[in-house]
Image (cartoon, rainbow, N blue to C red; front, side):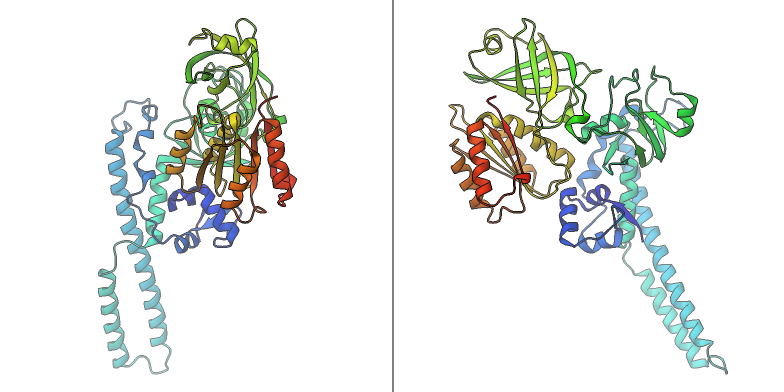
Length: 489
């Protein structure tokens, strides 16, 4: 019996990993060493098909860097469009051949069993028995010729073969996390895009901080690097993840940051890429770090921004760690020097020092149960980061955002919230024109009759967040199921 990793099973079935996790928790799917059986997946999702799958349409992910440097005629890749068309044709042929082979093997097994029965008597088979055998065999051959061209198991295996060409799966040891590496992107880039936190420094092959060991699978170097691996390290299978891509599925031994304590304190000279006014007293800042020095942080954490004149402020990061180069912050007008500088002439291109990360308001990645996010006022900034990270790692069963505010500009990220709601079937968004904790908790109660199985994340002014946490506690929510962040300290 064949087995698939949870990520690959979700991709083949056309559902999220969170959906697979939910099915496992309900007992609909059994796992063996973190994998699910192909037959069990087909029983649960009988509509699995090789065709009309969005995952198969991402041809543009086959990057030009995947073309071999050799210019021999037999190694030059065709255009992505031609390549994917040929792969589809090969996959269809594979389905038919596998189905025919399976059916033929079954027929031969049946022939063998019937011949055994015929030879069982002392007198040998009678003419009538042989005639019956011949009639049955003729009928079986006819049924074989008229069978459907593809059975479900063959179809799924062919689709899996197709996807393995498009994207390799990488499993990390010892954490057990896994992610897909598409086209010729580096292992490090793919892990960051998936919301994982492998160790790295320069991300350009100079420091060696992204060193990892290949336990299984094949890799290829995508670019030269200055850091020199020793001969002993090469023999043991060590690589630099920033300069290597996957040829096949991989098992990789690599260090990950699993808690805020695992992340180093960083100081980065970045620049202001964009300043967007959201309201007369509110702007968003897009701070861009150098390509060789991106910020490693966990969703929900904060960073300190320091301007060239020395003015600084600690702010929640309002973007996902899956893009540590482009950081977003919301700045509300205040009476401090940082606010004065931001609202009186700060412009794109100015240098900004980013120091961090700080804070412990992070996602519980080992908790796949449904999550409720409660943002009060500008508490939407760290909550937005958490939700984007939750989407990227695709582990939480479902999540619901409640955002209450009385600021004049209202819900300035409502378009983002509605877009997520439209795109994801496990995300809900409820905006409220109130910053009272009682109103928000009442809305939560209306939508969720049983709060005991939920996990809560609250962010906003300290008084309102404390009141919300106290109200949840009074309703029976355990303290360990709540995480809080104060945005006015």
